[in-house]
Image 1: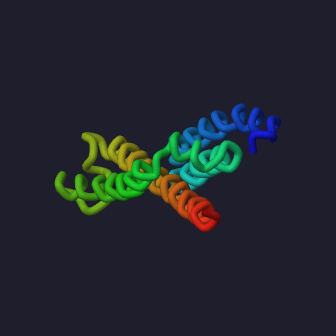
Image 2: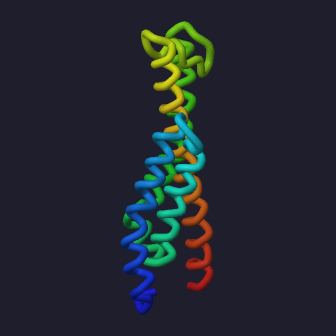
Length: 142
């Protein structure tokens, strides 16, 4: 895609705003529409756009597949870890009330962390699936 200069320039301009919008959806999902899943899809789509325009090798230098695979597990562990912390603090699994001195603050922290875990897992899973399919076509051409 070296000869598609307009696509490359427009993508360089749009990708930071796409990522910023994903962060907005992530951290304001508990106040309105959005949350971890939606933010993860938007974040993953930005990386996939980058890979489509600048090439798979370039995208894998930005987001190495080994790290992306570890992020899939890290997001799930964050989600599950919040539940286990609730149990260790004397509540039920995913009972956010015990995460802070005031139950309302605990609910806010718990939702924020669980949604962050979901967002990390969804975006890393999308990128991993894309890398696997895109890499497969590159391997079969060799």
